[in-house]
Image (cartoon, rainbow, N blue to C red; front, side, top):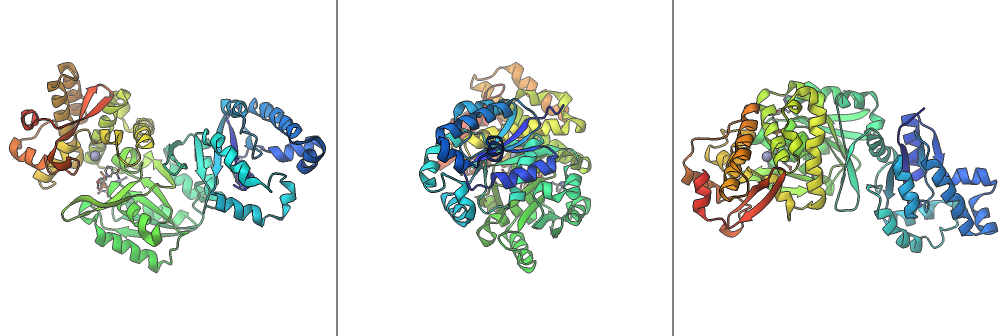
Length: 508
Ligand SMILES: NC(=O)c1ccc[n+]([C@@H]2O[C@H](COP(=O)([O-])OP(=O)(O)OC[C@H]3O[C@@H](n4cnc5c(N)ncnc54)[C@H](O)[C@@H]3O)[C@@H](O)[C@H]2O)c1
Ligand SMILES: [Zn+2]
């Protein structure tokens, strides 16, 4: 017996439920139930006939019965009728054994689609659809998985749903939509075997660097039906507008248009920079993030911040650009240099300290556990960016250790790698938290031991006054007032502002 969860695709009329469901069912090799068709078959009448003969209430009864029947089964792909899950009870039933996904579209899109269809005599509610749209909006918004369909092909939308069917994580975005984060070993090979399942059948520009291109970029691009590889130089030193300009030039010469997908394949430098190019080229083209370092997997690829450096400072130019999806293939970590693994682990530990202490368990820090580790660590980032997408509040907690760390990077002219600087900064934040009476010595010792076990440093010989001076130019210190993230306990962070200079210097 197939015990897999049902995939339930719902949403307003004209959002493409049936077309998308058909692709999903074919790809998953599962039976498809189109509820409206099923009701017609069982009743022996078309839906308009049922409406005419017995009224809408009778139709809703049939719909409810069928919903409850299907909700108890497994392994189906179900396209619901437009109104089937407006009823809270029906939504609840369907969610018990199913992943419920709501397809969204703007009114303008729905108007265009309904207008185009000659078979609208089949849709008794098409005439006053706008009133129904407004009435159902609230009910649809209750559904966790929302997929924006505007400007996207059914295959691309289906790819999101396939990812969710395969246990992808999901991030809700401020526009009311969301995107999946697919995590697993061997996903890149699976893309090459079936680009359609990853929504990559159209033109794809794979942006990567000279290190990652020979490792994964060339194989990936060769496995896609219509892809080009754009290779830039490696390193933070090239995360600037000159390289963005190179990417624009290449995109233009490849004839990339607004339907081209930009796939960022690499660490955080590529993700940030290619993401910025995707945010701005022709006012924005679809972006897929394929992070290849531990840091970019658990941190930079999720949350939509993209950008580049100026000579005056890091990340001074940027945008919020939500990706279409994030694909995390943990197998690529096999080629990651040891130092990069440790630096990524500094961010994992940070995630553990601010929200998920389970990440501090050493058994998880093995390459064999990478998929599980990444999943747990990414969930911390998701929980934060969903409630605070534009960094007005809790997103600041992700800066634990970072103000101390950035100052180390600056004062040493970036001789200390980011992850090591963050590890030292995290230790300083822990000491400060203890001095403020928030945590005890035992926890401070535990944090130190954890960082050492990974091979990360917890201190550096740096003049405290120079260090403090470098910290006070941090862009997060508003008008000279200190602003630091501290721990209130294990798994709990807070921002403290306006600490006296001496309190900070005491821990440096
Ligand atoms: N947008 C955000 O929210 C956010 C968050 C944190 C950090 N960042 C940014 O991320 C950047 C740092 O990212 P990073 O640490 O991934 O550095 P990186 O991108 O420079 O990658 C580190 C090195 O590893 C190489 N590499 C990447 N994948 C590899 C693989 N699988 N095998 C072998 N080598 C591989 C890269 O070519 C590079 O030399 C910084 O620019 C930082 O500002 C952004
Ligand atoms: Zn960081």
